[in-house]
Length: 599
Ligand SMILES: Nc1nc2c(ncn2[C@@H]2O[C@H](COP(=O)(O)OP(=O)(O)OP(=O)(O)O)[C@@H](O)[C@H]2O)c(=O)[nH]1
Image 1 (tube, rainbow, N blue to C red):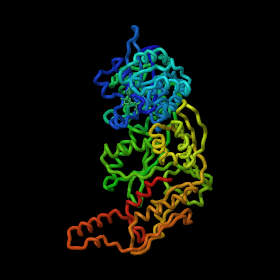
Image 2 (cartoon, helix red, strand yellow):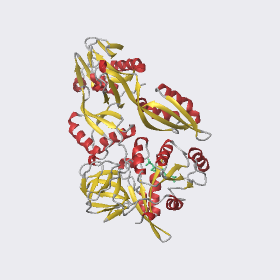
Image 3 (cartoon, rainbow, N blue to C red):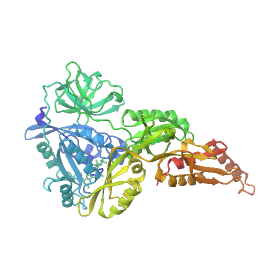
Image 4 (cartoon, rainbow, N blue to C red):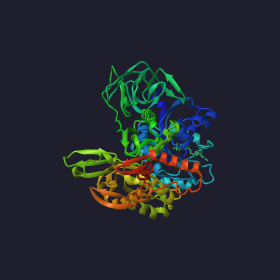
C-alpha cells in the first residue's frame, strides 16, 4: 500500500461518549465487519471491559476502503478513555496522524474530552471534531458545538454531527478522515524504523507487539533489532487485524500491524522502542515514551491463607499483560501473607481486584490505598516508600515529599462552592476557573494524590448528582509535613496498624482510629489501653474496660445445642485472632483500620 493512500487515526472521547460504538460503525460502514458482528462490539475484546464500558488496552484495526476507484487503508488505533490510562492514549496517538474528537451531544465537553484533545494537539495531530448521539431526544448539538468552540476553537461548521447507533452522519466522518488526516510521511526505501506502540501477551503465541512503520519495510523471516536493548529476534509472523488477525508477507512505511517473534516475556519489550533491521540498522531512534510508574499502592491478601500460591500465580499472569501493574510479597501481622501491589490509579486498582476475584475465584482482602512517598534522609540519600512499615527511624528523616496531582473538574456552575470546599478540606491549592458555557465551569486545583484517591471522585459525583467529571495528571513531588503514626495496644506496638498522615490531621485521625479499635477489640479480663502515637508521643487514647465475657450467659434454660453452637462459633472466631502481648486482636479490627478512609 502506498503511503498516500494510508490514513492512521484514533478516536478520543470521554468515557461512554460512544467511541467503541463509532469504531464498530466505521468497521460496518466500510464492510470490515457484518451487521451481526457489529452487534458484538468487536473492538473491546475483554469481558470485563465490555461490562464496565471501558476500553483498557489499545488495539489497532486495518480497514480497506474503496472510494472513487482508489483503495485506502484506514488504520484505526483504539485508545482507552479513562484518567488512569493517559499514557496509553498518548502512545497510541504517537502512531497516528489524526484523531476524531468525539463528544456526546447530551453530555457536552467533559474532563477527558479536554485531556484527550490536548494530548492530540501535543502530538500535532489533525483533529476532526464529532458530535455523537444526535438521535437522542436529550441531544443539544448546537450548545455542544458552542462548547467545542469556546474550549478548542472549532467552529460549529467544523463539528460533524452523527449517531454511531443509527449510522447517521458516519459516511461524512469517513470522508473527513480521508480528506483531513494527512497521509503518513515516511519513506519505504529508507532503512527500517518501526515504533512499538503496544504489546500484549497471547497464551498460545507469546508476546504480540503492535508496530507502526515509519520508514522502510518489515518482512516475514527478517532479523530485527530493538534499538533500546539491542536484543535481536526473527520475525516469525507479521500481519494486520482486519479485525481478525491476518498474516502478510511484508508491511511498509506508514502501515500499522502486529509482529510475532518468539518473544517470551512482555518485559523484554519496551513500548516506545524502535525496531530496525539487525543487519542494516538505522541509527536514529524514534522519540519514545517514559513508562509510567505505579503511584497508588494497596495490600492484597487472600482471605484464606491457603490461597496464597494461587494468588501469586494470578498476579504474575496479570502482570504479564500489564507492565504498569507491579507486586511484591508483603506480610502483615493481622492479615497474614499477601502482596503489596502498585497501580497507575484508582480505576486501574479496581479493575485488577475485580479481575482477580472473578477470573481466579480467590476471595481477597484489600487494604486502603496509599501513595508513593519520597523521603530525604540525613545522609543526603533519597528513598521511595509505598507502605508505612518501610518508613525508617524518624531521626534519620530530613524531609517527606508526596505526589501532587493537577486536577481539572468540569462541573455544573452551581456546584462550584461545595467542590471548592471539598478541595480546601483536602489540602488543595486553587489554580483557576474557566467558563465552558453559561451553565458549566472548569475548575483547576492542585491536590495531594493521597487526598485525591480517598474519596474525591465519589464526593464529586454526589455533589454534582453525577454531572461532574474530573481528570488529573501527576505534576511531581512536593515537600509536606507528613508523619508516621503508630498504634499501641496494651503498650505493645502493632506495626500492621501504622499509617502515614499529614501532621495537621494526625490528631483527628488518631482519635478516630483508637475509637474504631475500641469497638473492634473485645473486652479482656483486664483493662486495655489503645493509643496512637507519633515518634513516641501519645496523641490519642481510649481504654477498653475489663470484663469477663461469657457468650453463653444469655442462654439460660436447657438449650444445650444452641449453647454448643455459640461456643463453636466463638472458637472459630478465635482462629482469626492475633495475640499481641496479652491482647487478642481480631482480623476484623485490622481491616477496620486498614480500610478506614481518612477525613
Ligand atoms: N442513542 C445513542 N446511543 C449511543 C450512540 N453511540 C453510543 N451510544 C451508547 O452509549 C453507550 C456508550 O457507548 P460506547 O461506544 O460503549 O462508549 P465508549 O466511549 O466506547 O466507552 P468507553 O469504552 O467506556 O470509553 C452505549 O450504551 C452505546 O450504545 C448514539 O449515537 N446514540
